[in-house]
Image 1 (cartoon, rainbow, N blue to C red):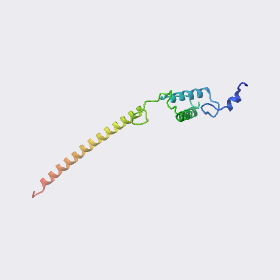
Image 2 (image 1 turned 120 degrees about the vertical axis):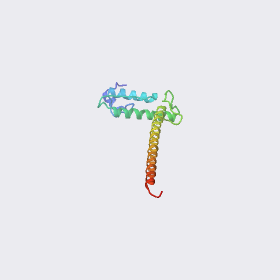
Image 3 (image 1 turned 45 degrees about the vertical axis):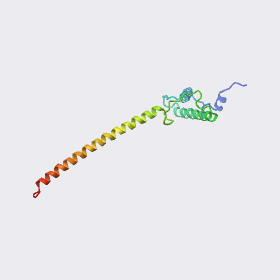
Image 4 (image 1 turned 180 degrees about the horizontal axis):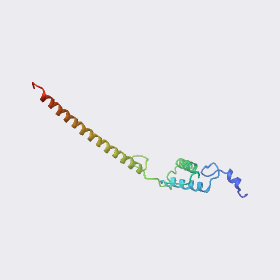
Length: 143
């Protein structure tokens, strides 16, 4: 077997499907993203402008997704991976459900305070109308 030179590296497909030989920072980013997805975690990644973050993210994520589909087809889904905790109502992580519940609670509180204010204003209008009506009736002769 002959040793691999640079031209062989350029022709060989990249494991993440990267369309050209990646820089070290791109390779590391793709590996970290893949590992984060495989562990079922949440990741925050940063890299300077122009380092190929978008393409690295797309390639590693799609590669992970294809791997998961292959595992699902083979009946190995979840083997060795620790997915994010999911809710009892669906497939969303529990923190998503908690955020949705908190937002719904805030919305209900806001709507309740609006309702209380509208009732207060209506009561004030009715009282003002009643006062104006009784005053007008008292001023009319013959009543």
